[in-house]
Length: 70
Ligand SMILES: [Cu+2]
Image 1 (cartoon, helix red, strand yellow):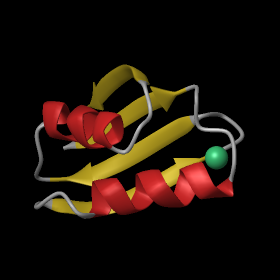
Image 2: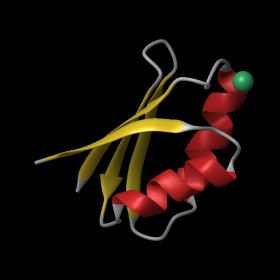
Image 3: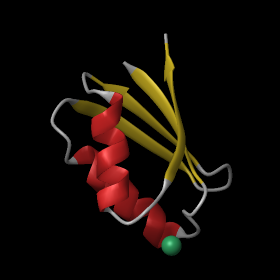
């Protein structure tokens, strides 16, 4: 599955690294791309969307919207 998540409270390289690491730690995740300028996180892997949302929240950020791409 591929997901696109909006995380508006991600503001700097530190946020970016924290979120990347948190998502990479989820079993099944294959690739994570964080676009800081657009406040978007792209995730690729065999993983449920709720797990990604949960990992971002636990890292201290607020995922606004998650879209699953076909
Ligand atoms: Cu930051």
